[in-house]
Length: 513
Image (cartoon, rainbow, N blue to C red):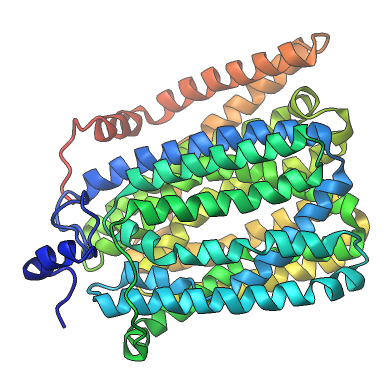
C-alpha cells in the first residue's frame, strides 16, 4: 500500500480525488517540509479572519437575541445544547487529530476514520432522541424534549467533517477553513434573525446552531476533492488507536459542559441563563483571539517534532503574541463590563456583570492554555493532558456543588480561582518539554501584564473623570483611551519584540522553519 504523501503516488491520488487540487504540491496528505513558518503565519492571518468575522457576526446576533429573550429562555437553550454536546462528545472524533499528528497516513486510514465517525454519530443521535422525554421529566424543564431532538442533529454533521478537517489541517489549507467558517456564520445568523423576526423566540437560537453545523459540513466537503471509499480497516484504526483514543478523551473533556448541566439542575434555567450569557461573551472574545492560534499551533508544533530549538523558539514567540493580544481584551472587558452590558444588551442583563468579570479573569489563561495543550499533545503526551483535563473537570464539578448555593457570581469567581490554582501544573509540563527554566517562560507574559496594569489604572481614572457622562460616551472613551494607553505602555516596556512581531508578519525577517 502506497503512502498518500509519497511523490510517486501523488498523481494517482489526485486523479482518484484523494488530494485537494489546490493544496501545496509538497503537502498532499503528508506534512509541509519547507515554508512551515510562513504557512503558519498565513494560517494565523486566515484563522484570525475566520475568527474575527464569525465573532463579529455572532456578537451582532447575540446582541439582538439577548434583547428579545429572557435569561430563562437563554438557560433552556443552553441546557439543551449542553446535554446534546455531552452526548456527541463521546464520539471518536479524536481520530481526526490522530490523522493530523501521525507522520504517514494511507487511504485506508482516512476511509476507516470516516466510517467510524458516521456510525458513531448515528448511534449517538438515536440514543439522544429516544431519551429526550425522560431527561425532560427528570430535569423538570418543559420544552426540553423537542429542543434536544433538534439541536442533537448537529452530531451527524459535525462528525461527517472530521476527516475533511484533518486533511485540510495537515496541508495547512487555512484559507479554505476560514472561508468555510465565515459562510457558516453568515448562514447561522440569517437563520437566527429570520426566525427571531418571525416570532419563534428561543427556537431561533436552536435552529441557528443546527444551521451552522450543516453549513460547515457542506462547506468542508466542497473544500476537499476527496470522497470516502467503501472501506473499513480495523488494522488501520489500530494504527491510530493510541493517539486517537486519548485525543477523543480530550475532546470529551473539552466539550462537556458539566458546569452548565449542574447549574441548570441545581439553580434552574434563569441562573443558567445568566451563567450562559456571561460565558458566551467570554467565548466570543476567546474564539476571536485564540481561534487562530488553536487552528494553527497544533499543526505547526506537530511538524516540529524532533526540532527542539525551533520548537522552543516558536512556542515562546507564540506565547508572547497570545498574551499581547488576549490580556488587554479581557482586562479591558472586566473594567468596562457594566457600561458594556447597559449599552449593548439592556438593563435586564445587569445581574450578569460580576459573572462576566469572573470569566474575564479566566480569559487571561485561556489563550495561553490553548498553546500549552497544543504543545503537550503535539509532542506525544496525549495521556498526560487527558488525565490533567479529567482532574480539572472533576475539581470544577466539586466547586459547582460546593458554591452553587452562594449564587452564580460567587460560583464563577470560585471557578476562576480554581483555574489559576491548577495552571502551574501545565506550566511544569511545558518547562519539561521545552527544557527551559521558569523565568524563560514566564517573562513572555511580563510586558503585556505590566502594560495591562497601566491600562487598567488609566481606564479607572478616565471613568471617574467622566462619571456624569452617558454610558455610551463613557464606554467609547474607556475603550479608545485604554487601547492608546496599552499600546504606548507595551511599546515602552518591550518595543523590540513588538517590532520583531511586526517584521515576521510583514515577512521582513527570514523564516527558517
